[in-house]
Length: 376
Image (cartoon, rainbow, N blue to C red):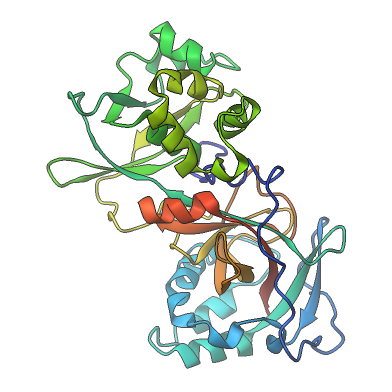
């Protein structure tokens, strides 16, 4: 999800394989007591050309009463920080102002705040389906160095200085860039694993843990304007992996078994992403900035299609955890977007930073339903 030189992260392989691997879970069912609220009328202050909205009662949201909304509250306050400064067809200012009167530790007060100030709307796609694909993404974290060492030999590059005045469009492919010498001197950090480095390029951001204890945070700085092609699909086409192995973890395992073919696999994707070092005062535990311009919150932020939903809005998500039928029913915030996120009932769920988040994100291809919360 990289656009206009802003960080908008992509899921590693889940999005790209969605056309091959349908969500492994049954779509969430309607909650007991499902009913429309009033006439079920659509919102008067918001509309979309690719999605429809029907007002429903809070009882229609499966798991709404079970969600600990105090865990979603910090993410909503971050949305408010940005929404207060933006003009929008939705009037967020009043509800954001009222949020200041709510204790962040009082889950019931938070629930009352949402139920009193918002109306929930069931989202449907243009096809009238109320079910869509939910994938996952994350922020990679890996060990590394700001200089090349015997351990850290794989470079991550800043934007080439030679392109700042005159950039080819499109630029050379990944393979051409690496062999051309254009990138020499643009190294911004060094890591150990070429597949992890490629993962960071796909995500568009990441953290590097340096040996002196500091955390180097890298953000998106641009691309070579080449189209993205999936390494997973390249491996599948050659029957190097099975569909069940077409995850970040499966590809990493293949690379360890076939070190001599790793560059060929990576070069199958002509797209190349450049990074920039973010300010040193960025806290290491904060997520990367999404399209809303505020840090994402692990398991409480999603990326959506901006043709369908307003950026910053609260959304209730009902899906399942990866490779299971275990419910994942949470209030989340639409704080990000991306080219691969298309449709009304479509979300990319931000799992957070690090290896465990990456394992969940790489396996997430679930069916799900969504409800948009708008001010009354």
